[in-house]
Every structure is written in C-alpha cells, then in structure tokens.
Length: 142
Image 1: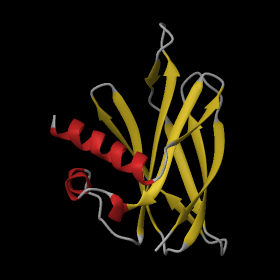
Image 2: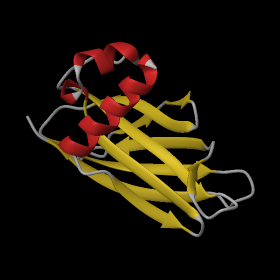
Image 3: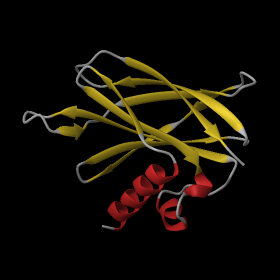
Image 4: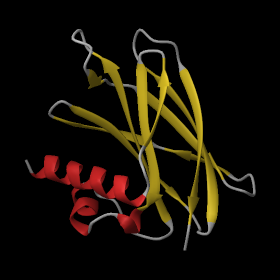
C-alpha cells in the first residue's frame, strides 16, 4: 500500500511538473517524462531511494498494450536510454523496473546541470513486437 501511494505521488508530481507525453507504435503506447529529482516529494524520493537534487534527473517510462478486451495494460519491456546534452556529451541512463500490483514502470537517474536541454534516445523491446526507437528532448531550468 505504501509503495502504491508513493507511485501515485510520483506520477502526480511528474504530471504536474511536466506534462506526461506518450508515443504510439502500432499497438504499443509508451508514456515518458523527465524532470529534476528536486521536484519529487521527499517521501516519494525516499521510497524509491532517489536523491533529491537540482543536478539529478529522473526519466520515467511505462509501456502499455491492449489486452484481450482492448484495455490498455502495462507490459514488461527491456528499455535502454542514453541522453545527449547540447555539448554532445553522451550518458547512458540505467533503467530499473518497478512492479507494484498490475503497474509496471521504469525509472532511470542521470546527471543534469540546468539550464540545459537533453535529447533522450530510447530503445524499447516488448516480447512479440518489433524493437522500437524513440527520441524526445527535455529542457531543464535552474
């Protein structure tokens, strides 16, 4: 219950701070967001062992696919992400899977020095589906 509450808080903070965005690839719907970790509520950061800081970023992703009834449902995925800053410096973002009840989502932390704009390149693999690559950018402010 505690983790579920933390997950809901994490989603709420992310959605308020930066609108959650999604991309569709055939039947897959990939939701993602990136923010600095100082925007997280302290109890959410503690629950997920995330350091709150203006120089640490967090990328969140979830992958949904329609079930037999056509309802979008979280599915497990293999996600690889790297970020490039405006100086073309490259950093891998290690992603970890969080499963709570029927929810499945992925969190990855990275360093950021605001103001900066990062370009994220993500590769998403779901069993039975072709490998998908997506690119998105996020501005980080002081």
